[in-house]
Length: 81
Image 1 (tube, helix red, strand yellow):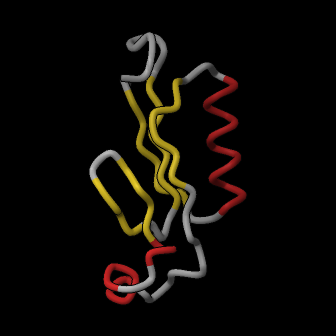
Image 2 (image 1 turned 90 degrees about the vertical axis):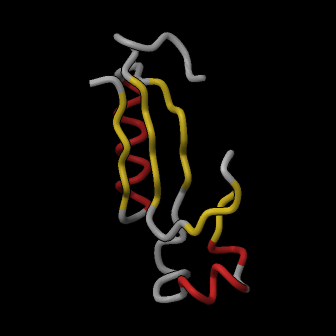
């Protein structure tokens, strides 16, 4: 497995998964901590008005309710692009 993409559903599990993969020397590529409760049910409103529900990414502003993690396997990748 070259990479894993994880959608976390709470702050504690987000941190646990991140730390677990870092301890195994996986390379963190993306880490977008979620707005786990603040942005529930606000997709349309968030996209239009509540910018605190969005995260800036290399692809622009993205609505993030769940946390998002991407890690690269060090057996296949030596550093994050």
